[in-house]
Length: 327
Image 1 (cartoon, rainbow, N blue to C red):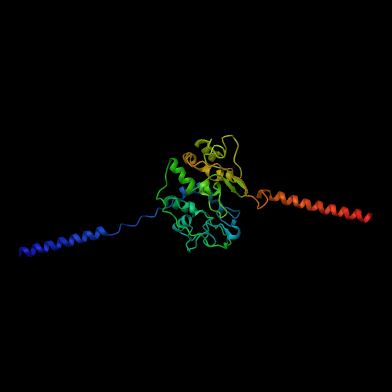
Image 2 (image 1 turned 180 degrees about the vertical axis):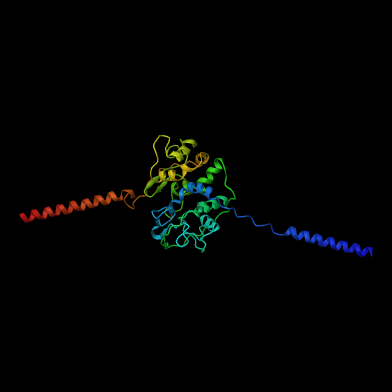
């Protein structure tokens, strides 16, 4: 009898051990998706230069800007307002985050990399959700944007693993803002003929929309090597260079609409980071017209001169023919 009781106790103990093992082996609860904060998202929106490609005369974030890709075709910035029919009002916050960081839309379409998801792919989980939460607050605007016209396939993109949280201070913070939020490279890094950034000329100056973008590397002759981190932060705040001159054109828009709204600490973090990147000797210039040695910015002047030449030639021919008749 005693043996039977002992055996039953052993069996009961074994069952208890098995039950406990089963509970321990259960999968851990899935990680909670961070909830986006539209207030913080507004700050990141400013740091991301106000998503300027989507700002048109149609209204705030209503899209429609054309990007002519030459032989590759054309794409248009999307309406990313909360309009449910012509915007992204039906998208969830998670779907916006996916599009921002991977270029993949809810219907499975891959966006053309004019949309800088290759930059935003390194944005932290919390920051991406905050930005998406702010975008969802954009008032609905009805604006049906033309569909893209591509003659080439969209290149595949495999996003890296994004950090859960962003660095909060110092050079690491500046690195994060420059390379994963503010899109500095899109304007200040020259590209090859295929449109790919030239890696060994990172932030060494380029041209955008007929405007030269300066060399931001610490090269003392062609870059900003003689500037301090504080000088850079001041330019981002006020648009003023150390010599007292002020930025114009696209950079003025970026300062007024974006960098001037950042904290002093974040502007200084950007300045501190830019002091650490490799110095590159490079004097950026406008693209050359094929076979002329001139730049594309001179094209209107050239056409005006040609027109004037035609008028003068026609006038000379008329006078010549008139004088022949009199004789």
